[in-house]
Every structure is written in C-alpha cells, then in structure tokens.
Length: 343
Image 1: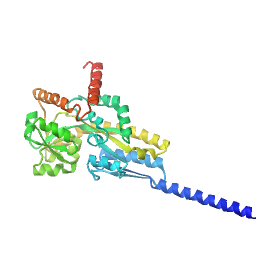
Image 2 (image 1 turned 135 degrees about the vertical axis):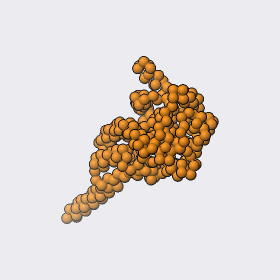
Image 3 (image 1 turned 90 degrees about the vertical axis):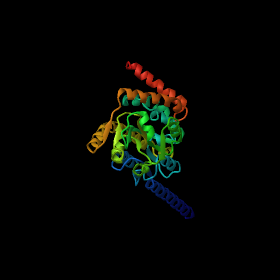
Image 4 (image 1 turned 120 degrees about the vertical axis):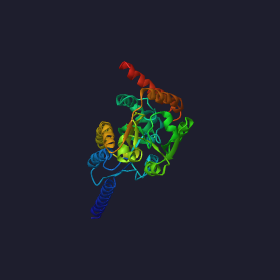
C-alpha cells in the first residue's frame, strides 16, 4: 500500500510539473510580440507591406502572437528607433540609411554618394554584390535584415526656384540631426544645414528656419512638403535606400520553421517595396504638378556644375560618411557593371 501511495504521489507531482510547463509555454506563446517602428506614413506602401509581413509571422507563430506597427514616426526619429531596438522597446524597424548607419556605418555607401548612381539597375547591382557581407555586418551587431527596400531618388524641394549649386548657397537646408559629418561637409562647401527631425520639417518651413528640403517625391507628397516648398529640382541626387531589420534576439526566439517562412516573406515584401516605390515616384510628381508644383530642370551646363560639386564631395565622404574600403568597393562594382554594358 505504501509503495502504491508513493507511486501515486510521484505521478501526481509529475503531472503538476507537466501542467506547469504547459501553462508556462502557453503563456510564453501568448506573450510573443513583434513591435515595429517606422517613419513611413500610415496606409502608405511601406506600412501595407509591413502589415503583410506581420500577418505571415503571426500566422506562422500561432497562439496569441501579436504584431504591432508604429507608423508616422510615433516612436521618434530613425536614430531613436535604433536606440529603442537596442533596449528592447522595439523588436524591429523599417529604416533608411539614416537609421541603419547608426547600427552599421558601411550601409551609407548605398545612399550617401551623390550623383554616383545613374539608374536603379546600378543601385540593384551594387546592393546585391555587397548584400551578403553587409547582412553579416548587421548580424555581427545583433540585427537581422529581413527586407531591402528603397523610396525613390532625392530631389531638392525649395521655396524659391533654384537650379545651380550656387543658388542653394543662399538657402537653409533641412538636415538629419544625427548626421553631424554630413553637416560639416556641407558647411565646408558653403551651404547652410539646419539639423532637425522629420516631424519638424513643416513648422520649420513655415517659420523660415529652412527653405529647402532634400526629399523623395513620394515623401514630399505624403507629408505635404511641396505645398510650402513648391519648386522641385529635377535631378536624381541620390537614392533613398532602406531595410527592415529586427533584433537577433527576436529572430532567435522564432523556430527554424517560422524563420524560413518569415525570410521568404521578407524577400517578397522587399521586392514589392522596391518595384512599387519606383513606379510611384513619377505618379507622385504628376500629382504634385497638378496641385501647383513647379519642376525646374537643369541644363547640361548646369548639370556639369552639379557633377563638379559631387567630385568635390567624394574625397570628403570617403573615410567619414562612408568607410574608405567600402567607398572603394562601390566604385569598383560600378566600374565592372558599366564596363559590361559598354558605358
């Protein structure tokens, strides 16, 4: 009898332990969350793609997993989004190079090289050549790249018409508050940067604190920048490149099966963001022109002045905004690409 009681007690204890572990695992599954921040406007192309990816993750994760997106910069600027990921307040963010370089500086090579890329084909070629090493650098810093996107070419939107480099020396530029090196380079060439966050752009134009904003047409339309800076210089200054990254901790919390599903979804989302964003650039310009935007096109002579300015910028960018070896790698890839196409 005693032996039987001991057996029953042990069985009961084992059952309690099993039930406790089951309850714990269920609670942990219910607690699974991915909180994603972005400056992208709500219901924009980028927001919709983030939602699509989130639904894939939530379904694959199962249980009561929750996926939350914070659009419109509600969690702060891109530097702040990177900080929030580091301290665990966010598990991921859709960032441009401005935020990504807070994690890995070499990424600046894809965006901070004015007038270097002549087409999206060139951008795609260089990105894909550098992608494996770039993603490994992010992983070494504790982040996983899920999707690569872009948002169009930077154009200059100004209050007054301007077509030559010297025209802009009379103006005050919006500049990202976190990019001190870029501001220093601008000042050395006679330009006036004013460091601000994205949310400050419209009030700053209204008060005259700034009168020129480097922006993609899509963002200028969505944020209504063009209504206060109604002149656009029709020149592709630089591509806006971005990526969706999540923390390695959040990634490691996923099972291999969930990781594979999310990885495949990330590739699809990235392709959609790149393809559709490029189509929407022309649509955005057309929409703004119907509402009063004036498009100013530089002449060939004026473009030569801009090219000369870019040539002056490159030695200042190499080793400051872009690590020297990465800078050289970009030029080498472009040389190979152009040689293969007889350019």
